[in-house]
Image (spheres, rainbow, N blue to C red):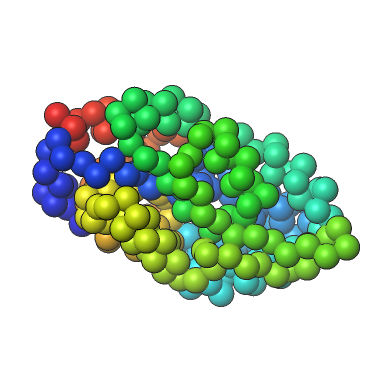
Length: 222
């Protein structure tokens, strides 16, 4: 991954975002775990997964299992309280004015991503679904983002559908499961990243304000 792989002024106009701790100011699974009374167990696994200490797929399965029995209404209320990251709406508006197509690839859940996708008018939203029976979470999860390199596969699919190469796209993320995106993209913006992601990034944003990405985008198009 290198900024040299993108010709100035010749962008694909496809930009890909993570959701948790990037477009929203929280980790969905940690908030659900807090509601279920298992935050200590889940937060530790989340931190290790985002730092690349354990594989993403196994960590997801383990954490979701701990949510078994949480009432769906409680889960919905919990996730609906999560705020957008400051500057998210401003950044989306700016990207649209520049002609970008916007994608969100998240290991989080449709209970949150559907709402966030609509709020930000995102073109493509991919996330996982928590299984529900009798009004409660079963502790199981399905979807296109359950494997270690799921984001990379979906990224390649989106690039193909938009008639561009992954190397011509921009990605924004914060954790270990975004490394595969940073390796395949032409330009990677690490937003308040975990240490493991920093070495894969072309630029670091260390303030909790997505509006800080705007001048980066503008500088790339000069």
